[in-house]
Length: 435
Image: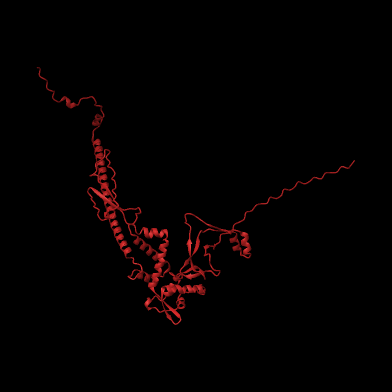
């Protein structure tokens, strides 16, 4: 018989500890986040973002410089504030990015994996004519063209405002050749031996700026400039004459109210002449003349519209890229008799338009005065009616208070069906004679 053995009690299996899932923590926002740029596709490997003085204000501004293609300015495109936007930047294939650049910093590695930019700003590099960068040097001394000396291109470039990146830009032989070509476009030149000497010519500069403005007009002005600076500037004020009949000339309705007056609108042919031929009659009718708030197609000719667009483009170019001192000389040349563009028809039309607007404003002021006088008269009549009603009410209350108690009680007696006391004292009717 086998000996009895004691069974060993097996310990229950301990439950495996649950692995807590911890989410990845996002890095904190950067105080200097990256910006999104759209650069030229055919840019050189030696291209750089440089800081150069602005041609109009001389303040330092960032530019994109390519030795082969020239200088580009950055145009900022921002999303509307009412619609929040952001950029999510990520490569198409992360593995290929790591193979191409195995040695990257931590910040570059985070951007290559994906990056969210809170501000939806986009900076687009657009070409800038090197001529505008040359103008501060060509007009450095501020003297008239006739009193200036002829200098070489290198001497003119020495007059450029100094900056830490200007030397790097001028080291490019290809870009320097472009600068010389643009100098010849706006300067008079003389040959001294084997070298050409240049001097700024305002007439040549004006012709060059007019060409740029004509090209801008041919491609079409931006919609905001076209609407505000061209279409609205040429709008002709349209008078709307509203005649309101007075209470003395309108028959009253059974309910005591008068019919609403119907506004009389001028015809299309008489809209302009009606402004200067309006008769205001204060006794029977009152005329209210106000400029129309609706947009009307202006009556300007095609030449006037083209000249206004050209002037708008020129003003934009001058205010954006030309220094104030040189800007005044260019504007004087544009208004002279030797200007390549004659703005006489435009100035004459704008003068007539200003006169029409001034007359419309005067008529509107007259209408406002008549309306205020008319409303004041209506208020006086209403106040007089209320005062008369109040007076009658007070007289009735005073009469009731002065009555005796017996008269008040007698007034309450029902006298229907009773003969009046005066009927007993009247003469009896004459009797008819017997036949």
